[in-house]
Length: 210
Image 1 (cartoon, rainbow, N blue to C red):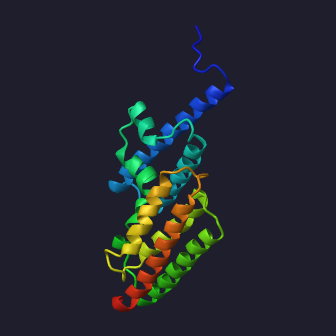
Image 2 (image 1 turned 135 degrees about the vertical axis):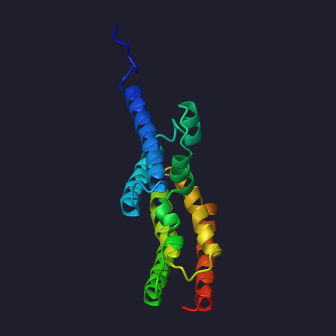
Image 3 (image 1 turned 30 degrees about the vertical axis):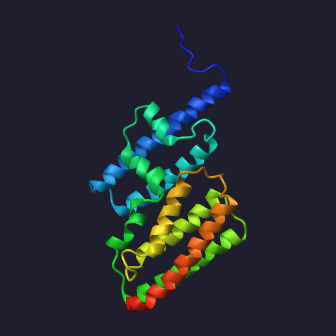
């Protein structure tokens, strides 16, 4: 006797999407463990992780009405994947990006180039908001680029507030769908945080002795 798993095309597509989401979470968990155990290199890990994060954001955006909470989805299907949840939902960027500051040593010439890179990313992020580009898939990449650049700059203080603020915002955006938009209040707050972080960044440079 044939057992029907779905009653119509829409329901079948929903279960296919559930299977894809389940697979992305499981693969991310395995990837995180492989990276922590040094089974794969940073060079291999980062592009794969970025791809999984992008797939996750696209899929959860399309499923936001059916799966409003990824945490609840994981509980429902008894998924014990804390590393994947942290990477996909809480952090939203690969571990290599998140911890690059501790793993990278840069010289004076490199520092000057990275300072210029950080300034450019700050300006790009603020301009993005000024142009009313407030969808998550528009804002998240520019903040991720900025955060990655700040992490590369070892001359910044370890407790640099601007880096912490960007990490918080990336975490918030990672819990939203790709097509979701910031509210006026959120956009205003983000612009304020970017501007104040930029000012802190510029003030920190002379003290860093670069």
